[in-house]
Length: 102
Image (cartoon, rainbow, N blue to C red; front, side, top):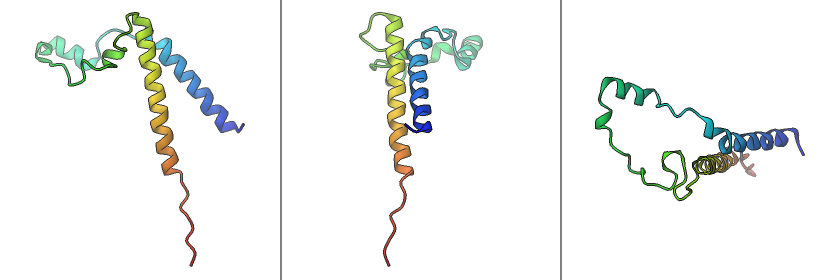
């Protein structure tokens, strides 16, 4: 196994661990924009976005009652999805152009 491949697999495993386990312990405080909106007083005018009722809305998986498991599964789905999209993208841009015969 090449050194690069070991590095990528190790990074993927660490990412899965961070997303699946450690993400539950992330701060539950509002982000900067939400805090400013609350401080200034226009947070009441906020509306839900189009996908607020989606399966992965609000950093969890709809249908999983255990909050810790819900956040972890959502994180793992996000890591796998990102890895697939990035893998396909890099495979496409890393193709070597075919040599044409003259």
